Length: 494
Image (tube, rainbow, N blue to C red; front, top):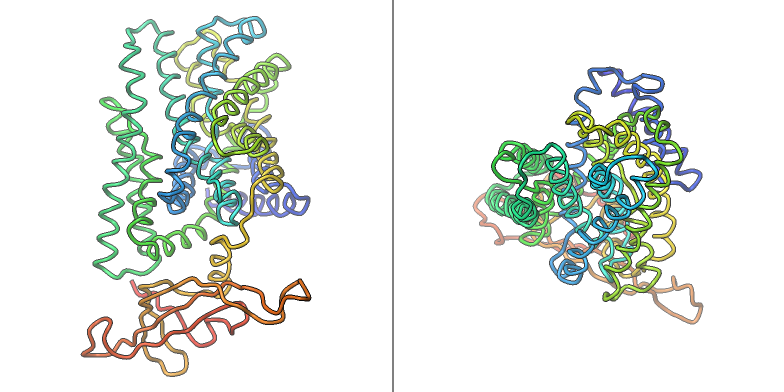
């Protein structure tokens, strides 16, 4: 298995580099590496690795969903709330209807089997969509109208909604008694329980981090452990009640961000570094799940069913956004962002075959084909269209994030040591500010230009001094100042 991990790292990074060089999303290259290296083509990944790939993919997905939670602000959620709820249901329902309309004559299956297929195809892939939306949020794209946040929230609930419908249709096929009203009631119940399951431990983690002055990476490890525990709890209580644990994972980050932005930034930055490895595992292993031989069996008829479903889905997405502040181009971007399919299709595509559905092989073939057709195309479409359509606020917070990352600045609460004197100081205040710098404006008639800066206030740690009492000093950092590491070193004590 160790060799398989090495192959995933080396081949995945190489594909990411090559695809970025030709202006394509690196994740597309990782997906293709997974398809080629998987057991259905070159068989380079060991069976042991494939047997645990589901756990690895879940952990990687948790990493990016936690990052998403640490970017979700209350005011942005309030702006996109109604649209997110509409987008979580209407597009999926219309896609299922579209598949039920065209699949029976094209694939020679029953309407109930078409409904099962539609519910599998109706889920957008968080593995593809969430990382791209996080990238836009990091760079300030679409922040004015909260478009990345809208898609993050809607896509997460969309999966819950579709999986419940899939369970209903599969149960109807099996001939068992299905209480339709009770099953549909599971959708809002699972959403609420999932959010509550995240808010409670998120608040407890905030209290823990405030009481005990832990440093990275300990905070990040604890958050990861709690998030993984939530996904385990979902399976443990599944026989009694459905819980949308992935929403709970995002809620952990949300509540910590609401209570303490400095702590949230610290954990988010460590997750960002962890994502470099998690991204490789996620996309390469998702690609390795794809059986191209099965996809080939779906043929042209399967592709037509997928395209018809996407047409209905796109209409539903556009309709969901009609009474929002988004313009036509921004709505079109949301339509494209709702195209990629991968995670859910790879997870449940074979379930009907295992359950004895007569057209199970056909359903699996179309599900696999949907990954091959929509994941790369959707990812490319999101990247290309997002760069052209999404607004770019020049004073967006990402300017400060870039400055902080490039200079390696600490956050409030962290301890630093003076390289010159060896004394310990605690960062007790941080402030993002804009200030004027002379002679840098592109306009030759302008005398100054505003640049981002971060002001840090330090308190000297000395015996006998209570926190906040004693010597303090304040420094401001911008891209024109010497690197932070020239005079200071962040002390990572556990």
